Length: 357
Length: 163
Image 1 (cartoon, rainbow over the protein chains, first blue to last red):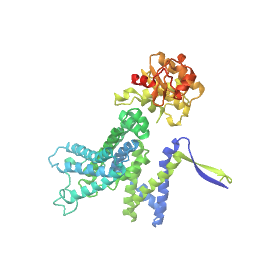
Image 2: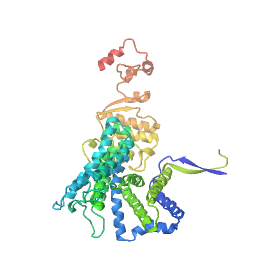
Image 3: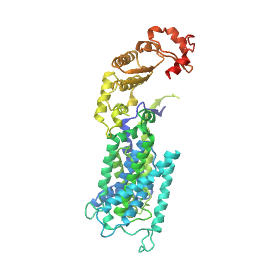
Image 4: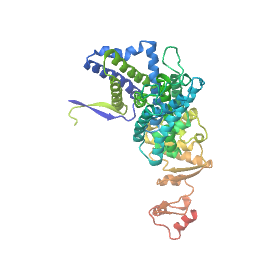
């Protein structure tokens, strides 16, 4: 008789740190395909629509990059936070706050406004996201409030705020009562990269942001201090690094990037403020950050996978008549399998022979 | 944290510059590894993977190699093998010869007698007067440590003067 047990590893496995997300993605697709079978579609057909069909056309790739943009922006920002041991769960709220402030500036643009107005929209959206995150930072800093709870609850405040704005003061008077603002003037809209596709300049900005975060974490003194504060608080105190400074920097960086993501969404594909501007990008970015191992390159790759799940969910709904909740289920499965696979980073399976017990 | 990152912790330029000097940190870690014979493969190795003795050697090396003007050490040879302890002591003697003021807190009496120019005992909230090692026998030192202060010495007064 032999039994299997998890035995702690002496050192974390470097192989499993990077293998774990890959295995988790494979397991997610396997579990997802049995889900298709249970819903009455063949697993092959389901997977085909979910992960192959979106990539068959140039337009599909453009949509993929478009959906990956807010995920990358939120994800790399969250990577900074999580590295610094600051548990910002409220990127969704910071994204909405960025959309509100950026959208407010965009609504001021007229047909005669200069193209520079778009830059102003981006700056405003970053300021909005940073401002929203700073509420969390201040509550944590001043009252030692739990940033997980505070940042999460501020998401709902932001959602109510944008909902009130588009149903009240900012509602389009010619919008037949729909909860949405006027369409933004062209000067405030994100410039399209390729004619006929929806992908806009935001994709490039997301890659720039990822490169910037890489530099921050790997090469800058501030990033080094953030990592040390997150990893070894005592060593950080010894070296004279301020944990308060880390808290503020981490939240302001991730808040402004999430805000930028929100600004790009409303100035990009949406083109106006509505009560539902994000299908949960800020929450999905938490999964993205961990699947991407809190590394900017990993976050970019994980964002593309997550974006595929979003598009796959939409296609499964329109082409196969399956519920769009599939996207959420795939996200949940991915997180579930990632956490399970991460066990093998610090543990290995060992078999015990005979009646050892 | 890698060895190179650990070296960066005490890099004075951290407080004056905004950019991490990654190459310098790697060289620094490699120098410590070589100089103090730390068993480590590369500067990018995680410091958590070092054994206790190797970790101690690395950290003492990190503090000694930049040749600071003042150094405060608590049990510098704690947990390292005899050979490594001897090499750490030799480094400290060399550092003292180069003009560094070193304060060592230790219960390792052999080490203190070998390294110190002046010995002081702190016990029961009092600080003794300082003695050169050849003026103070191990037996007397032991009695001080147990709290039996010499009658002609007024430790509390000495402490006040020192303060």
